Image 1 (cartoon, rainbow, N blue to C red):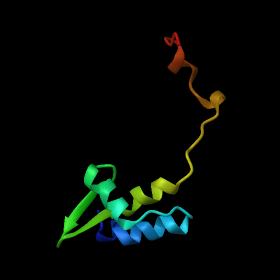
Image 2: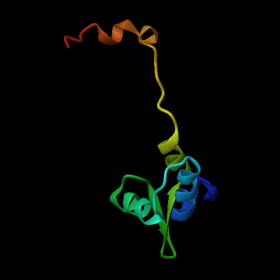
Image 3: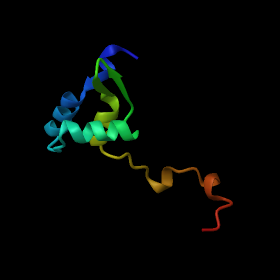
Length: 78
């Protein structure tokens, strides 16, 4: 992992704010401390992974039902 993969809590808040999602850096820090976001702590400052923050704003992937492999559901008795 490159050093640029890790961003400050303020930078993470800025990425979310650019997507019109507002959270304080302290909230993001709370997520990091609780394990909801991967983080490291250097020199008393906490950093989170840029990709994880961007994943919070990425649209969910959808898969068409007819694109699924029917074999996956052969034993399913839902």
